[in-house]
Length: 185
Image 1 (cartoon, helix red, strand yellow):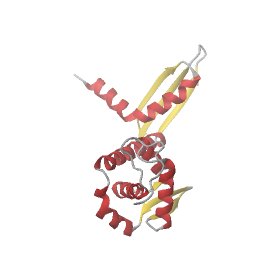
Image 2: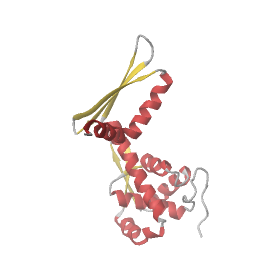
Image 3: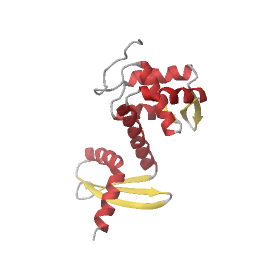
């Protein structure tokens, strides 16, 4: 049996074996069927603390070294995808990972990728008000169309970053709730 990894920062039921962590990284890339950066994979697996950050990085390095992951430069970011051999191998053994872990990882991946897309397609402006406080204006675009423009009052400067982070984390739900509230009969 392979040596257990560090268990710091892993939620109950998370992965502690290097073999399982490697398999999960490969499963994630196979399931999403798109390249991911090292940072994206780390963020996904930390969304619900599925595996230790350092162990995930070691697993990715080993997978690259063994030819299971292919790295290609996109702009300034190194993107990883599965080799054909690894894709075949993962399909054969992916069910050895607990179903709950597989589902959490894919759910976390879509959440992380959705937040990234919203950040890319959104604009945030902060205006300091003469009477004190700030207006934070969020503009969300989709395919070049302005979907929503929302301005909120924030009393303290140190709240601005928290408001921005929470907006990006919940923009889809917020938009949906607003539309539902405005279109109810």
